[in-house]
Length: 67
Image 1 (tube, rainbow, N blue to C red):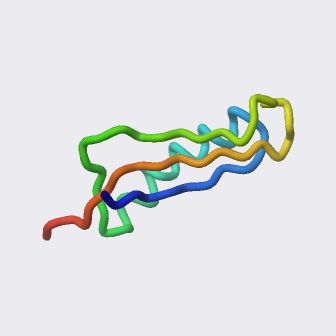
Image 2: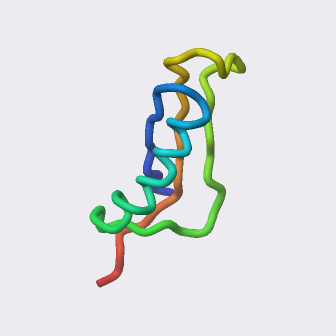
């Protein structure tokens, strides 16, 4: 599988929600990739969501668009 991986660093959950929105409104339309069926993975660095530099990763299965 091919995965697109996006990093989110900042106040939780606001920064993470912003990254999710930008993935679908900005990245997918301009990337040449499209999402495929499969699990989307959210990885969080720690359970301490109060950290102002909270780090998460979003993993989305993708494939190159067929034009």
